[in-house]
Length: 268
Image 1 (cartoon, rainbow, N blue to C red):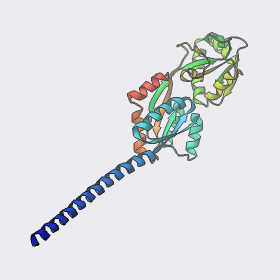
Image 2: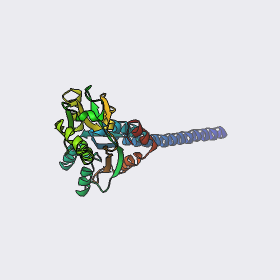
Image 3: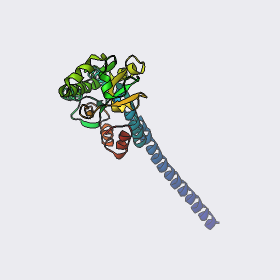
Image 4: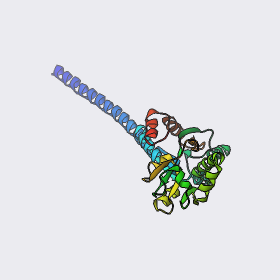
């Protein structure tokens, strides 16, 4: 009887020990799973705010989608003209990464210590968009009666357009004069130029080549001797609370995936 009682006690103790071990293993796994889930949820809650010029909206959206998938985070884009974005930044708007289509403005925010440094992100050229049969070649924008729309030099595309016109002026003053006589308006930003041509309020407009190919308008090339290289820049805002993630995004911009996206969008 005593021997039987002894074996019963040993059996009960064994069952208890096994139960404790199973419970411990379950708790350990649960903590690991919870930790892993929490980490994933935390990543999803990470958000970057990007200030993006109108001209870069489509390509940055594609890049942002790819980055979100790889980093399990969220990206919010604030899109406007570069000059408008600078004003918003100065007014205290939240921003982690600033894109600029104009060196004047990226230099300005660097000078005011919003960023420590910046890099050249992409480059393109200029082109003529047309909604009229009157404009089928570059020389056509100088013909009498043609209505040409350009952007105000306060905007990046307006500044690049001015550089293009200055090259025409230095090489062919007569051609420059004829083109200038056909300018009917100077718009606030590139989207306004495209819209004016689409509405047929202008026969043609000067825009970035990368915007021209997405405009669904006729495209007329500008001769190399007059054309300009338009550069786009990017920098991390110093006060960003997501500095680590922002720097990862900047590094991502140099990846083969991003270069392929840029190339497919017409950037050099």
